[in-house]
Length: 231
Image (cartoon, rainbow, N blue to C red; front, side, top):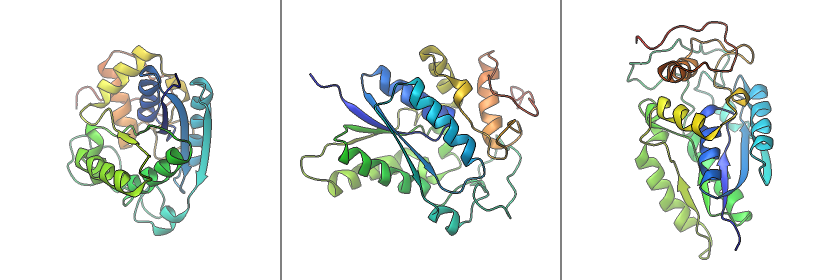
């Protein structure tokens, strides 16, 4: 019997790496898709995504360069004139790091890749703390995108959009990833720097908080390691 196949949107970060581990644990052969879209840490993210593909023994690794998102702008991840804000773990405003409709772009590419490779699923690592700030990380968005995939692919194509962490916290993800032996030393979350991580942007803060909540040390190097367990 052929094993099921899954495309994993591999950003190079810890959430997508954990999603890859979850997919592999569920029996899927992995096809990793990484996109460079002009984000400030794109070189480090690509390096990490490649390392993850090797660690997970992925069947295939596809790297796509898509500069239209940086040309569109309106995100501090892609626009050097916009400042990347310090962490606000309690904020409910959409942060400046939001890339307009990015996940729809990424999922569209992943669906194309999945259909071409006759894959059964597309995995994305979005989670609860993402959709508190990013509208394209909400469960309703993935449900709607599933309908787009069902209508827009060949009749014989059956691709499931999987967001296994859509009700999980970052701490939940880290805990599961540690259980599965995710190589977190080969992941990158920082929005600002390629080495060492800043430790104070939103992405660093949520990540550090997750490891701190579990009493574990994040293997990535940081310029600062604030204690986020008291926030």
